[in-house]
Length: 226
Image 1 (cartoon, rainbow, N blue to C red):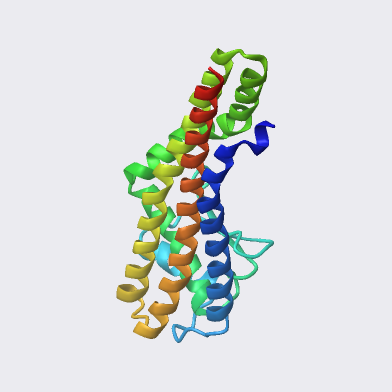
Image 2: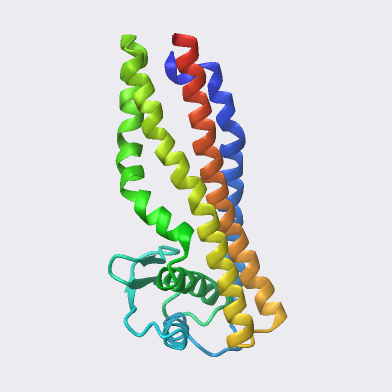
């Protein structure tokens, strides 16, 4: 059967890395959520302070449900903070918030990888939904043109995953610098922030590895069916 072909073994390293990254994210966030920062600001207060300090008065802050659902929406210029960070004084929460503000600053500064990622995001979203449909139909019907078109669509997903890496790593780097220089966060607190953000970054590495392995798998299957 297609779904149980030997190429599936290529996905095992990515699956293991993704599992490990998720465990580390939950573990580090839980650990440092119990450490109150001496800065004395909640996540929302920190977000407003950093945004105003950067001159980004037009960027709004909203509270949303969930845990670690924090994100920056460049289309509406809104930083959305989860219930786990919005009113929290913890080191973990402030680190996550500073990371999202890092994305807002990237957007304001026209950070090139972010501009590229935002440009290809619609294509990647479209491609992720249809790539495997075209590929599977092509493989099972022998219409290799369809299979190759599916591979081409999935290539957009891989490119999106790759360009996401510098965007996320840069946002974390900006967050650490902001917390250290602007707010004089202590070294032990910065260590906690770095642990949380490093674990989160590994989830993006795992996603990228998975996308690359899936692309290789598609190429191998197509070659064997050709």
